[in-house]
Image (cartoon, rainbow, N blue to C red; front, side, top):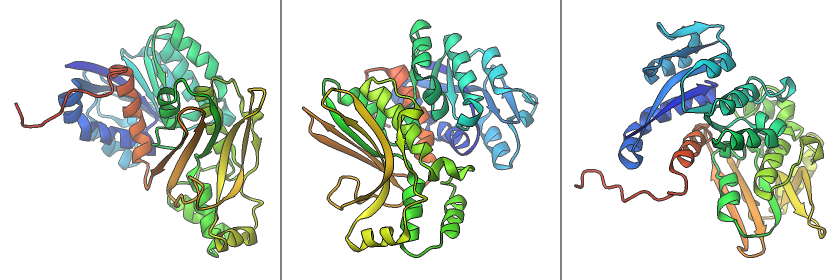
Length: 357
């Protein structure tokens, strides 16, 4: 049995649910993979908690469900304790980073936490786009220099293994084009508008569903999709794009008439992120609303679905789609990345037969 000492930064929708996943999957992880996960530290925006013997996950989950900070953890919590200070002081093997994106604030606290962890020789698994958008090459270099792994499959298209598939399963291929619908809420809103829901009501419904960012412009103006495209392209294509390199258009200017006309023709509008390979080998990145025909691999995506399509020279065209009715799949990407870090290329463990000796 191998013990993995974890620190979790970010206890919102993703972080709290990841704690619940740790509870639910503890037995399977021990029996199937020989891994015992121990959460020794956790931080949110108001405080943090640390116990070298391991925090009690049910206690931490209850605190967050009650709207309280990890700083209120009995005997081990401290209000006002900053996440980066927790990461710099704890004895742990891996940082699980799920704090808000906060690009306008320089990606903090996520970026500093990831930097600190890598410099300490800790592995990092993150679902936070901010650090990868702002410092993709720097963070990879830090991981290389300090001999640790940086994984971030949850930064693109929720729980869909878009990055992992492109990086691992398309090795040896030339990728001509990537098309993705990595942002769920924009399609959700456009579908409601096409059905006659007023704009403000559609926004409020999306917010009530928990799929719209607090700053709605992040989704509506295409920034979220552009950030995910930058990460996807840099990871899979080996490029060095920045957010400003993306030709970007959001969904605000799509008329209701255009949405309804598309539906009448059996089409569906989605905010499509595309990386297109030119004849000279360079790629052009764009994000814009597109009416997709049903025959398109992404043309039948539902309101809670996201997808990615890879067009390659030797593997044909591959489409991946996920139905994500709640944040659980996105939270589970932290576990997927952790297992990839500790299991490496051993993708298929020995047969797991509970109760059979």
